[in-house]
Image (cartoon, rainbow, N blue to C red; front, side, top):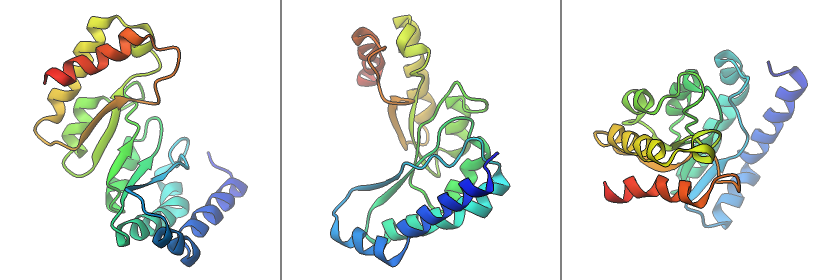
Length: 181
């Protein structure tokens, strides 16, 4: 769990970003999206998230929206218990969707949340894309795209950045079914 010192540092960082000075930065820098790169999920409980992170993130979302900018929440891992919290603060996008984490299978995440928050990611970069096989990559992508179809709000991507351990043929296989859909 997050310690008191960690919580204090994170709270100060978030308060600074959501302060009037942070708001002035928002006025000065044209942007299409604010991305919170502070990973607020693991190993945070829902209670700790509500007490430590949620008020500050809500302020960041409010500043972004006041400037006509979308807000993308970055939180890795088994974050299903926190998705409703991100929706509650009006986050626009959630990244990444790490489908290998507990409770994060793409079809159920899309079904339960896809109409209320855009989902960004969903194709495993730890095992599937580095190791294949190509047909499984294509099948996984086709399933992800099919599960998103009724709700929209899905950005096909690796669950994390595509690193050099992912063969080109596997990255291309990720795009192939999406381009045909």
